Image (cartoon, rainbow, N blue to C red; front, side, top):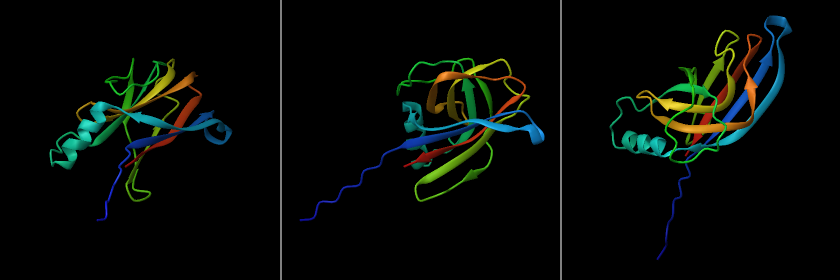
Length: 151
């Protein structure tokens, strides 16, 4: 008898580029990439999607917040969020979906960004990632990145 196993590991990878300046004076000042935690609400959303309950379950927004506490599977919110729609969606490999996003020099100024979260169209948190040190968002700072979900 042959025993088959199939392990599905749901995870995500957040990539962030931080820029200072605009136009020709714009310079890359930091880049980071790290795994994130898919929270329970995200896993529940995936279960609903697979079952055909798709209303408001798709990924819609990225939130930038101020909480530096380590992510837990029970997380449901981003603290003091600045939220905007994700941009371009691509499928870089089998079992992967990538959401591009940006934060312009005109957005979220004055915020000490320590956390990132992807949210579904119904506002539920799907995954969360923090930084050890804040990005002090000012009018000469912009961010661009991608968030890849892998399953």
